[in-house]
Length: 433
Image (tube, rainbow, N blue to C red; front, side, top):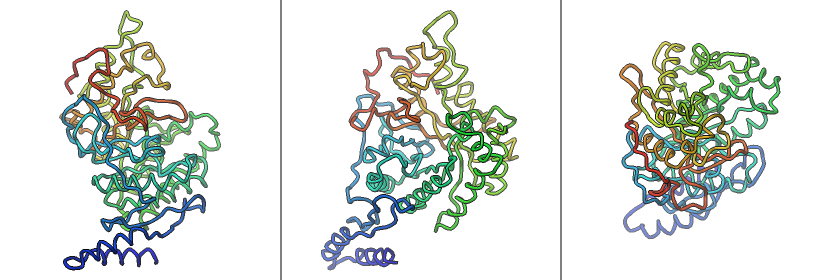
């Protein structure tokens, strides 16, 4: 109630004009220093965020610091971004936790403004909670000032108590961003791979799928969103990897009942449900060294770099599109949750490509990224491309504690983009997308 009274006061007082302009500015400056404390992480832990009004009369959460527009520097210009309204950038854990003031507003190595972001979590329990307030504040300012939309992630694990803690944070962040800046909610990430992770018990896997925990949590999250003012129509999704394509049409085994999950989600949510898949040609199992060589991979790079029919990513998206139509009986919304290229070599890369120096070179990163920017999202005349795609990622970050280098910026201290005009020793002509 106190929050609503203060909002109304600031809104009404700061909208006067004419002779009261000076008084308005003074009153708004005073209002900007007034805070109201709200619940910390929803579980009674950690410091409580501060709700305040800035001098524009806009409600914002944080410590009062203003976000400064960030753009990495480079002498390498990669040209126009085609279909920018359908492309977004994934914000890695390093950026969100340690330098949220460095969230890019412009695609690196271009002049095109970003229109959407993918956020994997509201806040990780392993991160110092004291940094959450400022990170949320920086994100809120960037998103609102740039008019971006955010795909917000929510975790699903074997720990229901922690899942609910995470969800309370998600709900708080959604209200800060506002419905107009929320593209959708991604509940769970690559859940089909849970069965292969270390220290995951069979009891957890059985409970997740056969026991219905995943579906139950999806329904509970949707009910909470329905009760949240303005969020009753927000798109729902869960992000999966290419492994789900190994079934007919989708994998449906005791360790990953994805097809059953999809059927129930479609039955309950209809067109509100969005299919989302991560596609990484960088990790494609069919990548191979050139015949007769021990360290060359030009043929694999040729199909991995390009974005037209016959190329790795478009063909995977086409297969996903056909399988969703087979399952649902109609066209559905399809997003690509992640795609990207690692340079230097990701420690998670295995197989023949670890022996090909060109594969993880900066030149390969440059080619993949530029062709991504130039992609119109078209695939072929008979198959629609994805409705939205996210590039992974802003900065180099870790994957379950293992270092990867998919970032377009090296780290939080970097002022330069990773790609520069002399960032590779060899210049390879870009493939036609």
